[in-house]
Length: 125
Image (cartoon, rainbow, N blue to C red):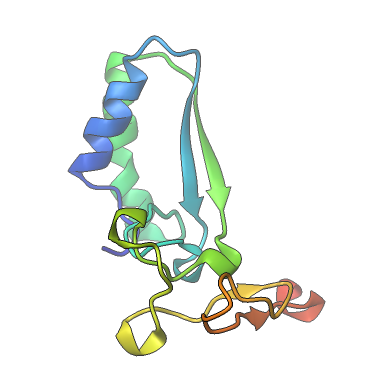
């Protein structure tokens, strides 16, 4: 999966939209592929990820007036990890993961590859 919303998101967010809550927050939506915690995380960074969310929002709007917000996220040193129920360990680049970026060289866990340091120049690029 490349960050696109799926039928699971339709069911999950639709259920929450009908729950009676005062607001629906679509949490931890990655702003770029390398910003995801896991390969399966929802994203909103290109036309494909935007297009995949449209039917979800359309269904929510058809059946609910709940305010919807999106929590944009970037995983930092926690990026490129297996899903928690699959152990949550770092996925190496050799195994299909990606390099992580954060403000320091401190790895998420001591045995994991340290992230690339994203300094001021990198933030502005």
